[in-house]
Length: 376
Image (tube, rainbow, N blue to C red; front, side, top):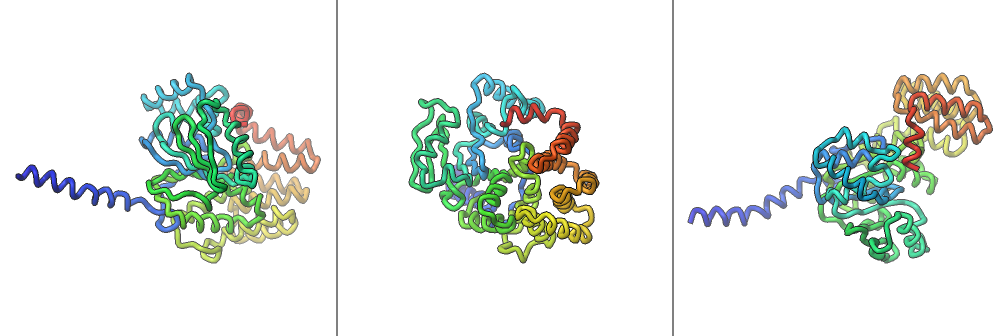
């Protein structure tokens, strides 16, 4: 009798325990979300998921790129063996290298093949998919993934969501507004290039773009298992001028009560206004603004970045170089400014200085050519 009552108790209490466990997952936009990992390259997430032992997860991927390109079976066998043996350093050494095992363009494919994810929601911004010609664009886009025809189960769409299956993985593609209801906790993967593209496409100020995004995300009531954010400034997927958006995204995740720009740190409004002036082709106004802001926030990296760009746009190159030196002392991770300004100078016809800036970056990153070769 005692054994029977014990078994009955387990049967009765188990659903309650599962319900409590599920309730512990924070809802994005409603509850503070603090379990966030930030990296430079999106491919680093695969190693993070491996180390955390995730299995059969749902992935919501906020990114302008699908990151689901095919990896040959012989590479997958090598990766699977390294994964089984937990050789994390060796796996990282095989990431984003010429002839490596995986890269920023394909890391979601092994995440599926290794059993880490079981369903993939991709949320891009690009009009080439989410447009009036969705059927034609969808077919061309899926073909570009380089999966064989017999593997790709035909994708369908209802005008808002594209749904299909590749190698047994269910995939749904939609805008953030049309993201379907998801009942299970998810891995939320965010690439800053998504926000950079929205800013560029809509000509909306950066803070308003983030506020709009989280306002929409809140309505989806997505339960969060883990959050991964990638800068993606290497290779210019995210302009260096948008790198600081990561700080704002983390803050919005941790402080879901924010609903307008009036309740955020004053520094963010400064960044927002200064870089809006640069995007609006007003470098003289931007330079004055960043100088005034630096009087209040001395050696703040993003403000120094804005000043260096403004000085370059106004052809004060000596002052720009001095400002870059201050910037890199404050935060060495901003050295991709050399590549950004190289492109600015090339457009202005100053090829000699453009080459100098490139050489300065190459001194710091001698493997840059190899990285670019593998992540075109």
